[in-house]
Amino acid sequence: MRDPDQPPTVSMPTGRTLPAAAPPDELVDRCRVGQPRPELALRVLVDWWLERGDPAGEAVLAALEAVDLAFVGLERALCANDVLGMVEHDVLVFRVEPFARAIGATDRAVDTELVLLPPDARPVVARLGALDEAASPVDFALGRSARRAFERAPRRVEIAPFLIARTALSQRVYDALAGEHARYKFPGPLRPVENASADELEAFLARFALRLPTESEWELAARGGTTTAYCYGSRIDRARANYNGHDDYGSLGGSLARERTTDVALLPANAYGLFGVHGNVAEWCRDDDASSRFARASRGGSWSAPAVDCRSSSRMPLSPEVRRFNLGGRAARSLSRASSA
Image 1 (cartoon, rainbow, N blue to C red):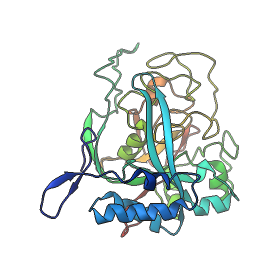
Image 2 (tube, rainbow, N blue to C red):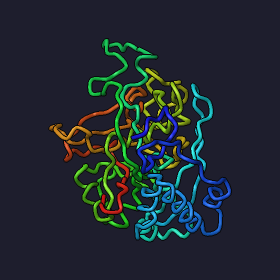
Image 3 (tube, helix red, strand yellow):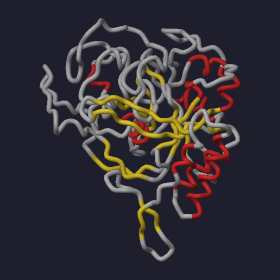
């Protein structure tokens, strides 16, 4: 597994480890969104990786060979971070064809798209957990520190390449494939699915070889290559996140809270091209701890949560049958040519 603080390497048959070579720029550029037949260029790029023993080749090939996915292209994702400056990554974007067909999409529809992570498609040892607490200790009125009771201490976690949805599951996708969902508090085709249990979402996603992300996958994706409290830096405001507007840890205040969900891609994306990772709806995840009596947790906070509960490390263990008006989820898929979701 690769340490994100070290350059990627390739293991050679002799046992030596060499720096991973960068593919030719012209080949990468042919994979970009808007280029003619980017999937053909990506296939050539996969062959380039495989010839060099680069594990990125196997991960990308697994996505390319999935009959229900279509390669959209390589996209540059950018996010302004008040600590790090402009953060940007090139990400491989795929479309879930059954989702696109169900809503009659003839062009790009972000709520049908997945991105491949990590961006270089290689296994990684990611830094996760309450990374912001050491730098920014904060006391609440109740005397609690910035790391809430259920958050995990900073740690390193091995994560294999995976696909994750760019948005929370939208009502138009879910309703078109699962039948109308009568329990919505905030109905709207591009609003997120809410008031659905983890069990219900897992059953729905399994029909398309998808699943809920693990907590580690979700956090890696939400951070967008950062270690700050939010993908936007040390603070959020309501121009970038839909939360309840309480001016506590990490909130810049401003206009009144919306007090409802918004469309899944209304607010700015992070540097991995994901929308809505802070607020809007909290997102169901599979608990990394298999021994947990809950086996599920929500991540990211919601429209009804204070800023502190919308941080990348914030988490709340929940039983999988729970339903709430501020709780939804996004799809993920493992990347193995021999396995399913």
